[in-house]
Image 1 (tube, rainbow, N blue to C red):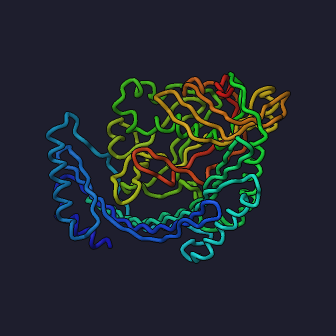
Image 2 (cartoon, rainbow, N blue to C red):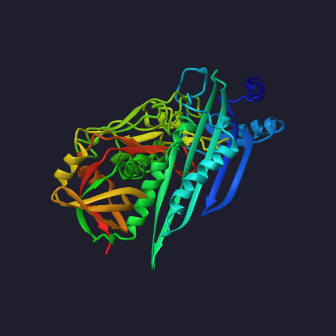
Image 3 (tube, rainbow, N blue to C red):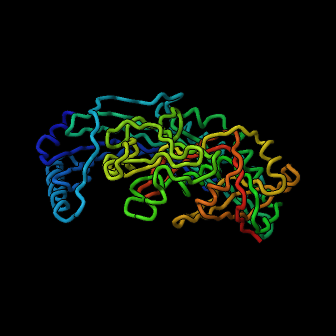
Length: 454
């Protein structure tokens, strides 16, 4: 394949060019209640070429090799046109050429498991909640994505990398009288099919939770000291903070760039946040980004102080900071953009029981349930929670929303647990979809958290 890509780029001209070719295989199985609603497997492929010339850069996606000449010509013409109409020429940070072939270690390759066996596994998990009379519906599906990427650039890089992701995720809905409640289920990862075997306990636990929610009381609105669990802590780290660590998000926002200046104190002294996509077996794991740059761990916050940022080769020059290997595309239809890999709050020293004792009276909130951010402010839902009284978890509560200001909330983090967990079914919708984006954290305590309820 590389011979083909070299031939395509050979007549590109300009100052720089790269090309990415991908073959993507997808398998999907889904149930709605007892009904099998999808059973499919397909393969697609395509190319993205980028050209840099005289300070302008452009990309073109195409699906047929015969279109390569036209695509290269269009990318170069568009880059030249862009250069004539911009006051700030685009430059790329210098990198060393890389030649490598990489495939992750898999406990069990999902491509070697039959469709019939995959369907039976999904059906078995789906049947667990449906065995309960108060469960009125399920929407549970299997997803498998295998991307084989070939990357080549005019500087001599030549990289082949496989990315393989499997997951089973969905929603369980229960009803009693006029009250309806639902809860999410999710298992998976990028370390093979074995990560989704033997997960009956997860579906049993989530089924019990959704039934318990039918008996729970709505939370009383107020301002609380709260323990939030690793799922909610991870979503907070990703959504409320993480996107401001992506250099392309803030580069055209002067006020935000000033606020997010390296060396600024953003949070309490016990807070440490890192993006480490080099952790093998995790959902967000990869070796090279879609510019052919090796990804490396980036400490974002150290003891409350902003110390790092996520970059592409272009934004690294813009900010005069080191590139990081975080320029990632959804697939062959897109040019890459700056994306998080595996972003999480690092664990501290407190046990969960310590956190309960420190909280005293407050709330224990679990599992993210949607949400949104607007500048510095955020609003997230929590799937369920418990009142905390005298250092003990008490009755269950539901219908929970939390909101606040990012920077004040970072300062209000009062204790950090020692029980790091990373998400099994991540994802991010920034501009493009990235199913491999991963987040997590330990249990943490946040003071003065605004909780909406009744």
